[in-house]
Length: 115
Image 1 (cartoon, rainbow, N blue to C red):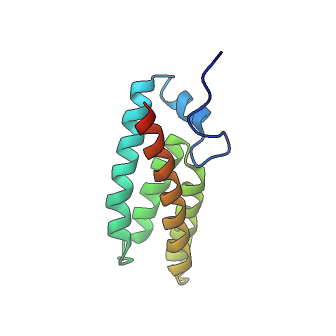
Image 2: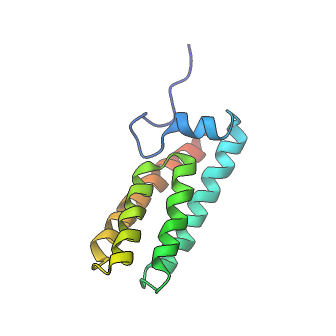
């Protein structure tokens, strides 16, 4: 009997996408998940004060999130990037990004603990 997925298909990480991006290499999956988790710490730390380059930082996070299948994080980063670009108050978009990253990191931490 095949083992169940590490997280549900509708969870914060699209595991099928991640597998396609890593060519099914479980070691590479763990490596990119760990790298993403570490990157989010750095980027969210930099975004906390909403510096002038916050849009570029959100853009970087969007690309990384898409690469691993964290599509809710990517969507939240798009909202922050857009708010910064058009001059809207970014506080709500930043809060949404923090929430989605927290959820993705919890799923990543759980997956890494199981491997």
